[in-house]
Length: 331
Ligand SMILES: NC(=O)c1ccc[n+]([C@@H]2O[C@H](COP(=O)([O-])OP(=O)(O)OC[C@H]3O[C@@H](n4cnc5c(N)ncnc54)[C@H](O)[C@@H]3O)[C@@H](O)[C@H]2O)c1
Image 1 (cartoon, rainbow, N blue to C red):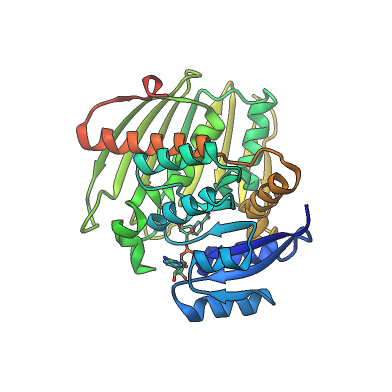
Image 2 (cartoon, protein in one colour):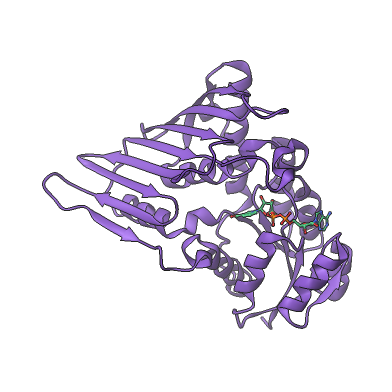
């Protein structure tokens, strides 16, 4: 295939990350940047080089894009994603896939009939610390029995929209969605979900969650996520316990691997790598372009993304009803 012509919809923070990576991939050319705020589209187009700044997705289509990165706020992913798939334009959607089960189901159905590739941006799967854990599990060096998952946020004050569930879809659809997805990716199918949630500081939504997950493998995990922790590090961590073994992470910087009694633990420290690399963005972008150019499987398909939405919605259902939700019956 000739150079893949890319358009970006939503010229904010994460769009800058993807464009900085895509600019270095010789297989692609970023030809258009769209944003409802004209100056934002113009500023990013200038940063990219010779991309054209436009106001909406239709204008990106008119430029002749082969693929679109949808990097608009959470509740504004579904419509442009569907437009891309219906027009057979490849689409990379930032997380979350959607902010309701019905919308995620709709994307899954349309993706199944489109000639274009759908890919969901779940960069944590390719973050250095989590890749190390995945490798250990896949190689049989770590058989997880129990995990302790934490994904906090400092505050829902900056940017202001993070406090608005109309824009985020709810706190769980913000950063916690990364580790909800990652728990499935690392530990496999979830069987049951139980959640106690509270609304402590937020004015309009639940902000405090204690979750218990059981997996088809027999493994159990606790997952706490809180929206106003005040940025005390580590606000993101994962501890996984196996037979005389513990693997634990600190942010996306370090992973400690202790695989047996009387053995030295190994610490892998990714501090000096760039954020684009150690947070997994470089790899997820490369895999998406690989899928377009080589016809390989995209890193996170619509079916896969749908299951993570299903898990998130089961957590919310349990939080609201007090019931244990049996996901095993739903998948
Ligand atoms: N994977 C990650 O690590 C990661 C990190 C940050 C953000 N994100 C996700 O990326 C998305 C964007 O987040 P952000 O931090 O870049 O937000 P942002 O507010 O910095 O940027 C969003 C941009 O979209 C534009 N926009 C809004 N509505 C639009 C529309 N209808 N058409 C065109 N443009 C529109 C805004 O003007 C803004 O420039 C969110 O869904 C967020 O969850 C993912």
